[in-house]
Image 1 (cartoon, rainbow, N blue to C red):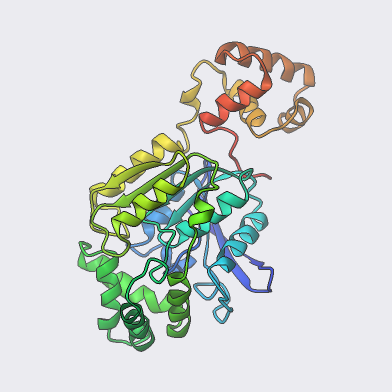
Image 2 (cartoon, rainbow, N blue to C red):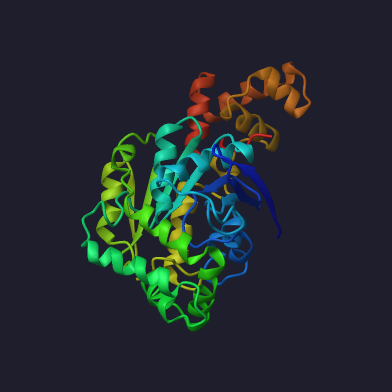
Length: 352
């Protein structure tokens, strides 16, 4: 499986690197720390969240400003700039309606985007996330400053001892291969100065007001023994988003590894919430493949003429298909059909 790497420019002129990979329902991974589009693809700690998800979805992800293949010397005025960058990337990649995944601090960016663009986000998934940064939730200033100094002093050194502090917090139960790989990847993602600036900006995150405005179905997962982001922060996220469902994952790893049961539990929850490639047709087993195609386009909001053009059919044939669809899924009109189809996960493909 290959990924396609491209670039776009943010509103303030920063070049952002993004990658698309896989096939199936569209899934956008909000930006977060410790990423590099090229190295994520082969790093044992990051592979599940890149190559792994690409086996199930059409995945869009990008390196946040200052990291990976994006501009390394980019300004980071506040955490809000990452929300604007997310808006830029999904537009450049021509993802029209999609599920949005927020990991760690990426949860705040995903939540803010979902709140501001309800017409674009069909499903929201938060894993190991938070809406309050360390400073916002009142951690002692000396603790925050100590972590920042560790980044400044040890991030780029050949000796990984300083970086080991972060690795231990992120995945205390990982094997040696994953630990060494994560230690080695950190300085590849960003310079020490940029990493310190990102850490400072993340500490000031406060997306609580945005969380209350989210309208789409939301799944919140959090590791019960998370050593990096407290379990209570996950509970807070779920309590703030209207109707969100909360799931505990039995692991101490903030960055869940493919080899542990918690990863399989995560995928099982994803399957039920936002079915991957090959799982959607079973929602309407009585439909023919052509009728399923038509229902998918109805769920995307296309009218009969647009569906006819897309599928190279006459409008009369489209109308006949729609009559059969309505009868089989037991709805009376187009609006009801759209609701049923979207509830089953249809209608969330990237635009072409």
